[in-house]
Length: 84
Image 1 (cartoon, rainbow, N blue to C red):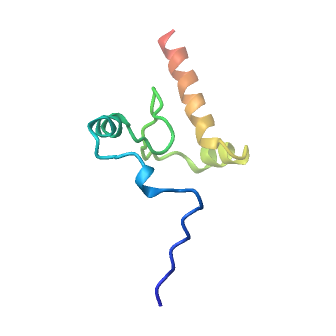
Image 2: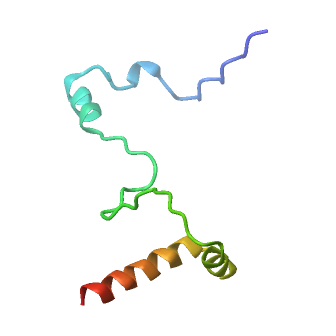
Image 3: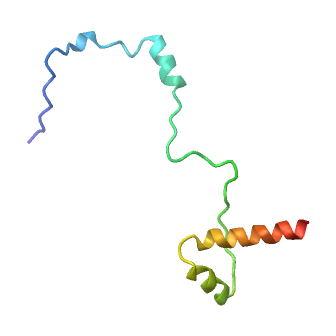
């Protein structure tokens, strides 16, 4: 069994469609940059594995969602104090 094509809408003439092989269309298609996903951040995060004490992890996880971000913030604050 073959699937049927949707009917051509009334008033549509396929011969009136623009020629997409024309040079100006080729330039437009070549210039169009396709980006997928969300935009790249300026300061990207790096995936890493680190071993921490169980009680430290439990304390951060007890705060709910965002516990990894809170660890990142705590480490950043420590770095700022160390640099000062």
